[in-house]
Length: 272
Ligand SMILES: O=C[C@H](O)COP(=O)(O)O
View 1 (tube, rainbow, N blue to C red):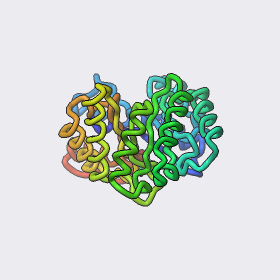
View 2: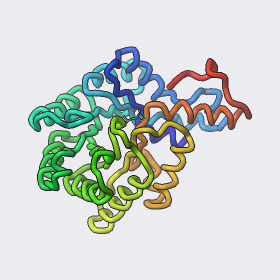
View 3: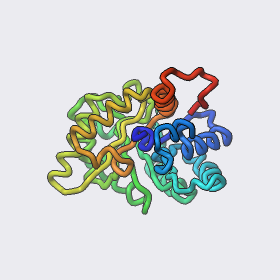
C-alpha cells in the first residue's frame, strides 16, 4: 500500500487520448479495489497514488477529470522542457513549463541538457536548471537526469549535485524512454548524492526512480533502498516517488493474492 501511495501514475504516449487520461485519474483516485482495501483494514487511509504524470497537452484534461471526480487533491505532474530528449531551444523549454503550470500542473518533471553534461559543460546545465526552477514558480520541480545517456557513474553523481544546487526539489533517474532506465546501481549513486547534499547543506531533496519499474517486488526493492540509505522520511510521497505506467496493476494483483490466497484472473482486476 505504501508503494501504491508513492507512484506517479504515468501515461506518456503519443497516442494518449482524453479517455486514457480520464481512466488514469480514476485509477489514481481509487488505485486498489475496495474489497482489498477493506480486507486490509485500510479504508480510513483513503490511499491515492502520489500523483498522476502526463504530457503538457493533457494537463488541462486531467485537471477537468480530477475535478469531476472530487479528486483535485491528487497532484498533476507534467513532463516539460522538450521531454524526453530536451533538444529544443531553451526559450521553448521554459515556456513549456509556464504553460503546464498555467494549465494546472503542480509538479514539473524537467529533463536536463545531456549534450552539455556529456561535454562537461556543467555550468550550462546548472544555469538552465536554475532558469527552469524559476519558471516552475510554486510548482515542485523534478530534474530527470536520463542516466542511461550520461555514460558514467561520475556523470550521474555530478548531474545529481548540479541539479540539487540549482534548486531541484527531486532528482529523477529517467524518462522511461532511454535504453537503460531506473536501475539500482545508478539509484544508489543518486541517493548517496542526496545524502551528501543533505550533510553539507541541510536541504532534503526527493528521489524518483522511473522507467521499467513494473512489478511489486521491484517497488519494494526501491523502498528498501530508500529506507536503508536515507531513512523513513524518504519512503513517503513528499520525498519519494516511483514513476511508473504499469507497476500499480502488479501491486494490486499481489494484494489480491495476499487477501484471497490465489491470483486473480485477468478479467477480475481492472487494468491500471
Ligand atoms: O516517468 C515515468 C516513466 O516514463 C514511466 O516509465 P514506464 O512506462 O517504464 O513505467
